[in-house]
Amino acid sequence: ETQTSSEMVMVIGMAMTLIIYMFLMLYGGQVMSSVMQEKTNRIVEVMVSSVKPFELMIGKITSIGLVGLTQLGIWILFIIGIFLSAGAIFSFSGGMDTANIEKMGAMQEIQNMLGSINLTQLLICFVLFFIGGYILYASLFAAIGSAVDNESDTQQFMVPITFIIIFALYAGIFSAENPDGPLAMWCSMIPFTSPIVMMVRIPFGVSTWELIVSMIILYGSAIGLAWVAGRIYRVGILMYGK
Image 1 (cartoon, rainbow, N blue to C red):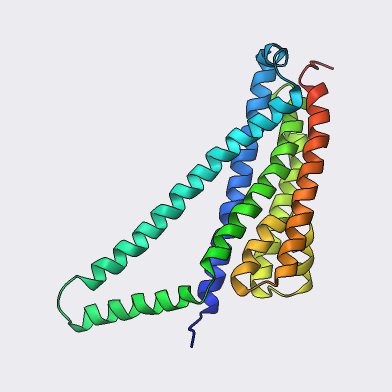
Image 2: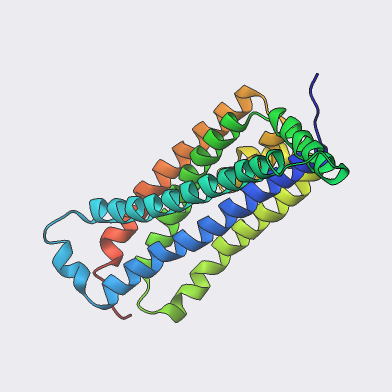
């Protein structure tokens, strides 16, 4: 027998979705700011004399992405540590009065509910979709940073990307109510929305073929977009003014 809770599954899915949304915006923006800063200071002119522009862009995206994965790892370990510590405190708090029995029962119920979710699959998919989504959006941000000269010019290019990410977030919120509906299904396959929407659906249970197809489309699109962004980056970093 297994014990599940639709509310807990929804909370876990929404938490994963919000974390990916926040990190895509945060670290994608860092890539764009770094590219624009190097271009404004003309440091990039010296750097491209020693390394190819595409390699420079990929190195920047990779290094900032590893910072994001490191922070995610710290958060995951911190949350696991808090959960284990709380269980130990309730177990060894002493006495078997009514309050302690109720606390231990609540903790046991939460553990049973979490045990019904495949946490290993959830964490692996979370990392894979985060990496794919980050490469996709970071390539766009790098292309934008190389094509402008100042921060005010980035706003007109940022609007479409911001709109897509916000749409993906709202699609994820609505998908939590109907994780097998057509909106959730199609947004899980579109590479610009799949990293956010799919993380809502996975805790409810997603078929293996949907996960595989979604990842293939996501990583194929990310690689193709990185190649296109590299072409823009190669030309844009050495262009100034009108």
